[in-house]
Image (tube, rainbow, N blue to C red; front, side, top):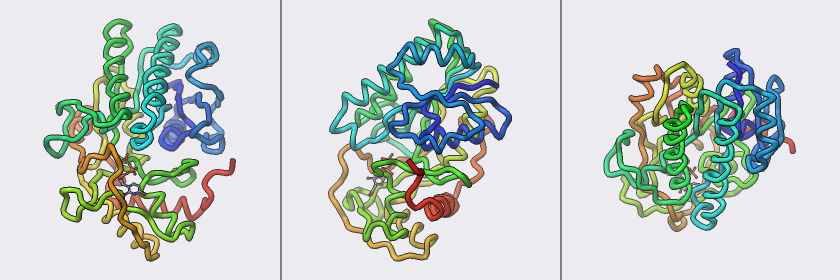
Length: 323
Ligand code: UDP
């Protein structure tokens, strides 16, 4: 198929692009390179540098690409930042998302695949989390994604734009060539691996007083290549709806630090810090809907395997992508 990928220079987007090209699809990437990296865009893909805010540029890029499906990764995605700068999240994740939808309707595209998040659920009343749980986000990041899911329902109903929304749990790991490089790194695994690389002398644990067995937050880490595969399955005709993407196993912050120490063979000192506002204690996916309805099967489910792939990439690219 001919695919148009917003945010295709970012961490998850770039690895999706690589997998899509390997599967024989054609790809145009649209990215403002604010978080993404030119070097992360597979050279087999076309790259248009632009912001979703630039409606004319966006419409031109869509008209030139004439895609059959949009995969919309471009967004701001930091829980902590959304608690201090909510406007940035609503303007970009909601407002600019609507600009993309308007352009998509104008040029006429049949399918829209959206990167949503488990943060739409807030603090879940039960685990594992299934798609029918109430949506009660506890931070503006999750709220912005929930709002955009609702907007997609209206565009599906009123404009016939078929959509799939994937509620990601914690994306982690790397492919052979592409990995996680944020200019300001806030994510757990890359920050812990910085200690193993000798770039920091300790890592930080945000909250050791949660109601969990070891007092630290529990998350469901999912390999970024497994996320990418689910998006390819969503392209099949008739697939629509919302799907969780996670492995169904939760690991605490301390368990992640231990896995990083084991995989790297390095000692990783950790300091306990106060809780980070907006963090729910436990998030673990129930993802049987994606397995049953899309035929999704995670190929790299273990935390050890996920951390190994991240460690391989960070060791080969200690400074990330060249700017
Ligand atoms: N975390 C931490 N130290 C760090 C980064 C993150 O303790 O340096 C915690 C964070 O509070 C959360 C978990 O690790 O409980 C996962 O955070 P991350 O930012 O990787 O992903 P999120 O769950 O926010 O999407």
